[in-house]
Length: 173
Ligand SMILES: [Zn+2]
Ligand SMILES: [Zn+2]
Image (cartoon, rainbow, N blue to C red; front, side, top):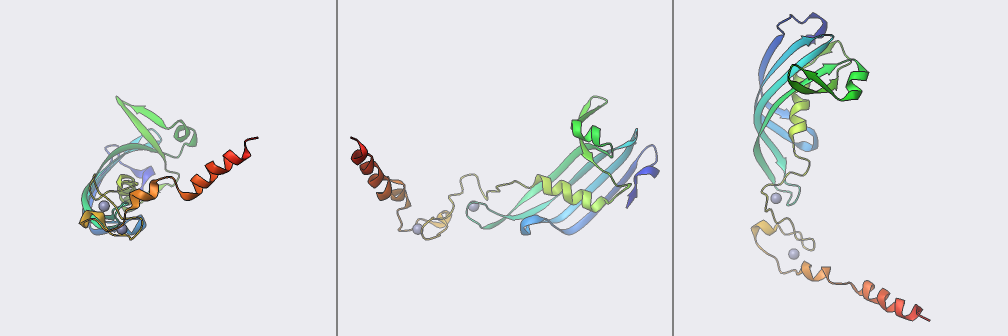
C-alpha cells in the first residue's frame, strides 16, 4: 500500500511481475510486467502506469479462446476532489490529463495495475478481424469450414411478413 500523503517530492517508483492476473469474464493476462510512478501534484497525485503481458480471452464472434499482447501506457491525475473529478480533465504542464477519483489516502499498486489492464481489454474482442463466427443454425465455427445450413435464406422475408402484407390489403376499404 502506498500512503499518498507521505509521497516524497520526486515521487515513488514501483515495479513488479505477475505470472497471471485474473480479469473479468474469465480473461487473464500472463507473464505480466508493470511499472508505476506516483508523484505528488498539489493535493493530488500524478500517476503513470505502464505494463505489458499476454492477454488470454475469448472471441466474441466464434467463442474460441485466443491470446494477444496487451500493453498499458496510461498517465492520469488521481484526486479526492470530487469537483475536479467531475470536470473530467486537468492540464498539467503541457499535458491534458484525465482525472480519476481516488478518495482513499492509500493506493494499492496491484489493483491499480489490474484496473488499467482491464481498461485495455476490448469490449468485443475478435480472434481476427475477418472472423466468420458461428452458424446461427447449427453452431459450426465457420472459420473451420462451411456447414450445410443456408442461414442466408432465413433473411428472406419471412412467412409472417408476407402474411402481414397480405393482411394490409384486406384492410383497404
Ligand atoms: Zn473468432
Ligand atoms: Zn450450420
